[in-house]
Amino acid sequence: DARVTQTPRHKVTEMGQEVTMRCQPILGHNTVFWYRQTMMQGLELLAYFRNRAPLDDSGMPKDRFSAEMPDATLATLKIQPSEPRDSAVYFCASGLVVGGKPGELFFGEGSRLTVL
Amino acid sequence: KNEVEQSPQNLTAQEGEFITINCSYSVGISALHWLQQHPGGGIVSLFMLSSGKKKHGRLIATINIQEKHSSLHITASHPRDSAVYICAGIQGAQKLVFGQGTRLTINP
Image 1 (cartoon, rainbow over the protein chains, first blue to last red):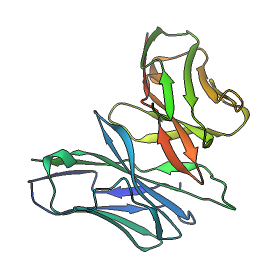
Image 2: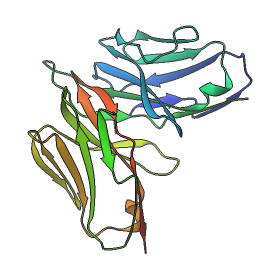
Image 3: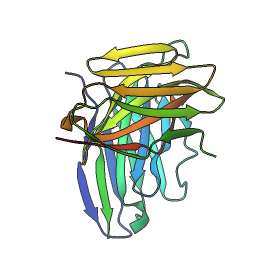
């Protein structure tokens, strides 16, 4: 059963530490998204990739966040240094876009980050 | 003004009732997803639609392109339908703009 896999599921860290979250998209999907969910803001797009190239990272605080796709099976989201306001659930999602038309979207279980 | 507006924000109903959640969206959105999120859980896309109507079990989603409006209906609601339902508009090729979500509680 194909699914998007995220690690870690839970992470508690201290302010100032580096945090790396990983996502394995569904094999064959060409579009990968990173979203953040908080009680106050709801779901927000941080960044997304098409065929491993970043298409939009305007939702991401550039000074501390970075997102990469080193290969087609791995997307990473890194926060350095982390701050308490980064505490949230981070979701990865993947989908297949063909001919500019969106397809079904599949979400990972999320990574719950707590920064103390 | 948000690009995607949902109503109601909260909805409580008795088991068996017919449920409707509404979503209005702005220009630039070509299609949308209805997402479901159970408490503490992940997110599942229930439907993606750009026209007409889709049905899956007790769930029905409709969209009116001219009026820029979509609805999610649940027939014969059940306590396990209790979740947050999120309307997400698609801009371009799959960039999502999210509504605020509707928290649905179905009491037995």
